[in-house]
Image 1: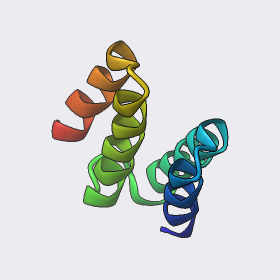
Image 2: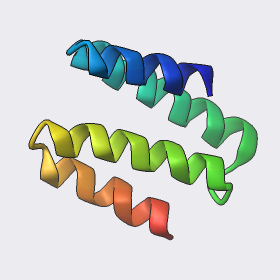
Image 3: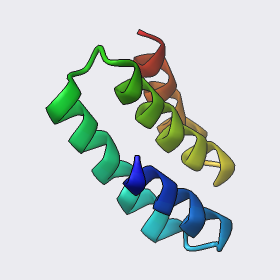
Length: 70
């Protein structure tokens, strides 16, 4: 959660590369500790997808959204 919060701070400051790195780290940590089916893992997938969507990287966002829904 702390990684995700810091990523949001970086995103709001325009530090998108830093935000993306932290979103990916948060997703990896949640996937490893909680598993793919945990709601918090889905939240991390959604957060990274949202970051991509905001940058116009729709093709990168879509598979993350689909995985979060699954």
